[in-house]
Length: 494
Image (cartoon, rainbow, N blue to C red; front, side, top):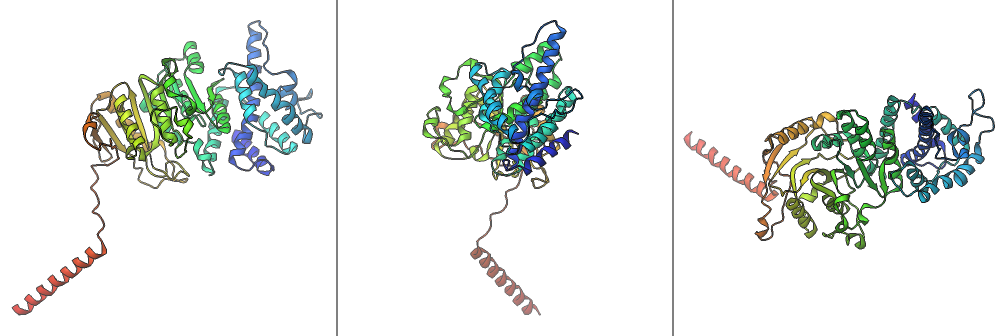
């Protein structure tokens, strides 16, 4: 039922003149799903209050409740014949509903409330559905989706994740929102966040890291009221710059069971890292910051190491935002390990001196669909300088792509060896795919030292360099001469 409903909604959006791509499909589905969810949430809270002999104050005014504008029903439970549709429905949504909901952002100061999330979403997202008849069909389909049980929400969250994945595969800039979930799960398992710790992603996108961390921690914690409240309200934090990504991230976390996600809608890089205090720091940071972007000079002034490369600014932000003893796993372009420009060298030096970069996971090409770059994952702890780095070169034994995406089995050996390394506390395991690199952060005394951390697997024999045509011809002439000499010797013997 769920899957078919989502497909039917996409089919309707495909026909509509206002929705042009998968990006539009998920954006429009998101605001409809959010209001449908909000209706169920308000009903649930009202019922709970009634059982306690209390009265619940609804967030939305009567005329803006789902049951009044979206799906008013007659006494038989059928859609009321006077329900808005066609141009009247679009006029109400564009000129009354969205402006009303957007005002919650101004009227609410606390970003951690559902009221603030309502205002943020509807002040940043537009209704792109042009046909009121198409919208009427979508509302009817959304009304059939149940949000009542944990099983319902789990299935909905799974389907929503599938939509996010499809959006990432659709091209344009959709790929920036989707990090392969097997990679996220492996990163989380190695970092091992615990109940009571805070988890942060300053480039939250679709909130894949926070949602997967929620699933990981929920499955392993003791199911007490206190733990559940901590997980819901005081564990997961994020920031997101882009409108659509913010909405998708909030909706994704809601469907995973977090009522009012602590995601703030702003550009993380506009914060001066010199102003970050202990209260602003986190125990665990998990992120895949955007790479390839270029930040303006005024944004670069917020950082000690000036660079236009977005990912390098994010890395500085993450190091500063990590508590002493805190743990991080960050995806970054592999060129970070070897670039010789001043900013790259300075940033590597800063990372090695302030953190223990204990593991580098080298990802195969094609891991990120549509992004033609090679990446690595940096695993580090803040507080002690780096003495040894364990490298693991992931090789699934096949070309990665849409038909052969990364899966959990691909990463099983890496996770297993990483956990064993953590238990022993010594240098990591040496295999055909893994090796150790000793680091001396005091080597800066050496002239032109660049802190090169390139991925160079010593267990794979280097291929002989290709010879020039001249060298090949010279060898052929030498062999021809030797052959003629041997033939001549044979003739003389005869």
